[in-house]
Structures are given as structure tokens and as C-alpha cells.
Length: 215
Image (cartoon, rainbow, N blue to C red; front, side, top):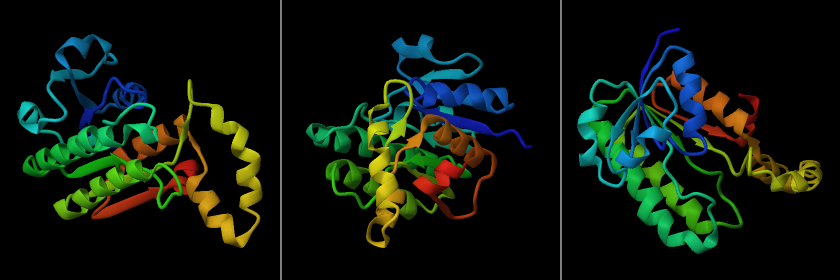
């Protein structure tokens, strides 16, 4: 396996803080963007660089030399009440990351989006879909993950919906939606992210929930 030089945004977040130890344990060289006051929160064995995820110029120089960019910035605990934040944080940070990655000639960009279409959380879906469109327009080789809800520590309530998803899969009219919108586990996402980093595509690769669950 060829080690990669990976730049991660959101390294202290729910997914990033768990992904970085996996990548470093596999021999990858990881640099993580963080606020100056949060450097101590980064996992060990990675290089922390201070910057503002909403201002690509604040960290562009530190991306040079990386071959993979993993973008994990997003509003925590998304809800319809946070529609404006999805534009001001999620989409803005994605646009800056894509711009910086393009200028640095990054070989592979990894973006965690969201399953769509969906009947709820439309502002969130629209912001993440707009991020996907920016990525397409950039021409970067990219992997897009589209989970709907990630089950893990502190994020377990959708387990009560599993019987409903199981029933919906039985009927042709609802089967595809149930597959697309069924929750995935945190371990599923981490496994898929790790595999994506180690197997970069040529062009655009999209992993829907069913692919994420299968790793």
C-alpha cells in the first residue's frame, strides 16, 4: 500500500478525530487544519496547522505537498433551524477547500455530503448538493460519500426507525428511498473514508448509503 500525504479539515470533529488515528496507524502522513486554540484537541501523530476553514488563504500554503484532501467541516447536529449556517459554514468552507485544493493540484478530494433527494432537511441537502456541484466544476478527482444519518456514540436514536426501514425495503415503491436514506454506522463511514483515501479514483466516485454500509 502506498502511503498518502493527507490534509484534513475538521480534524477535531466527530468523524475527523476518529479518522486521523486510522490513517496515521496505516502509515499515512496527516496534516490537520484547526483553530490555534484547538490544536491540543487533535489526535496524536498528526501535524496541526492553524487556520480558518472559511478563509482558504489562511491555510493554502500548508496544503502544498499533500496529495489527498479530506473535507469534514460541517455544522454539528444539523436541524432545519440551522439553514443559514449550512450556507455560511458548510458550503462556504467546502468552496474554500475546493479552491485551495485545485490551486495546490491535489490528486484526490474526499467530500462527505448527504443522501438526496430527501423529504426533510432540504436546506442541508441543498447546501451539500451545491458543494458537490462545486467539486464537479473543479475537475478534481473526487470521492463523495452520501450518508443520511451516521449512527455512533451520542447519535443512536434512529435505531428505533430500523423496523420501518425494513418494511419499506419490501415494497418496490419505497425500496430505493429506504436504501438511500437508511442510517449508516460511524464505523461504516470510517472504513469507507479510509478505503477511499487508499484507492483514489480517476474522475468522480459517489458512494451512496448502501455502498458505505458495504465498505
